[in-house]
Image (cartoon, rainbow, N blue to C red; front, side):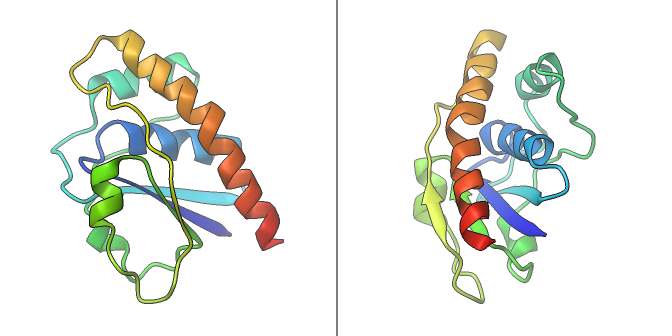
Length: 136
């Protein structure tokens, strides 16, 4: 299975939403994971609510440190914030990386989370689809 790691600084908003979206859109083809360079204690309530409103599963979402995935075979790393791009670790084997930044809605109204969720779906899904097609 094609494995995508989505990185953000806190792993509490954007990367969590991206993980849920990719796992939903590519069920059975892609396994999306998310992590942070400085993970927060919990996933933002706005992110969970936006995912629920979009009909997406949130079970099992929790902030993780990127170090837990250093030995995991990863096919693609996507950084969704500038800080994560700069702090992206070196993986044991070369891994293609894509930087696709999104606005951080943390601390903003639910509407901001919904907008970012929609943007992630619109911009990130085609990137994953293209990477998956190159893999085949």
